[in-house]
Length: 301
Length: 136
Image (cartoon, rainbow over all chains, first blue to last red; front, side, top):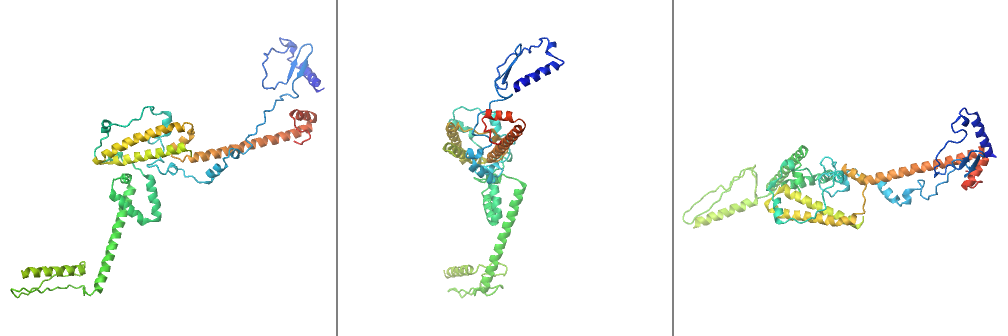
């Protein structure tokens, strides 16, 4: 019923159209269209015109396509759970990763956080222009190694590269914890000079680092002076309280010695000890006694 | 991490350490260090030979090019993995949202069509194999 109704409606429309098939060059015949195999399944009806126009329906509805097969895996499923990536996702999303490459590769020496474009060390350049390879890797013989004979001495400043950035960071981190140990470490590094393991520090050459070194040296000198003053004060206190040194005033040590041949009395001013001089204490007394014995021996001969 | 990758990582670390030691020797060279330098150069060649032997074991390891971009910028490559997973999750959520929206639209459309064209809708649903009595 519905099919005949649609055909009737189509016929009536055709009659009232200004461009009716009767005025067309082919009359009421449908235009010649090469039949193409319909692969989409959209054309579910074939209309045959002519003396007995018929409509052959091959499907219930226009544009009635066959549905694609049901797949188990669609975007509606939790793909993280499906591929067992939940643990990895939680690990990566929960943990805070530092942005720098050096945090991923802490063992690598040198400045690795700088972009590869600056020093022509990018991986992309290797992909775009792969180096020539495939040759056999052979050890160098003595004549070839002769080309690596170097002149002694340090490298010129233009070739000294600032390196060991991770070590610097570690030292800064230690500063916050133990400031005294840093100065000791760096004094050791400074004394070692451009030796093994310390080249980068020696070759840094930045203004901030030299200022820090001077500041540390000043601190060291001040610390040493303080220690010396404390030692002096302690010794003074000891000598004040000791019986061998009655006072800080000048003392004259008289030595009397006698010769068999001639009565000889001599006086020797062993030491005149001033209050500002260093006090050697018992050691000096012992030395004085030895000198006295030696002099006595000489005179006896 | 698989054993071949661990071996490769160890070899690369040793190689880098060799290079670092050569750098230290060369930076303040002393004549008595010439023999040591020659040994180090040969050890570098040996390191390259070892790394070359390991390349066959890691032929099937594919690295995305985007990771190289992260490394060239001096960024942590683990951030690439993290970004990838977040993008995948976001896309999954987007697609799930689209699918759910289309399902709701289909159900709503069928409901309205069944009110306006009850017979045609019933035919359609029987042709699709839907349960006619089920309310969409």
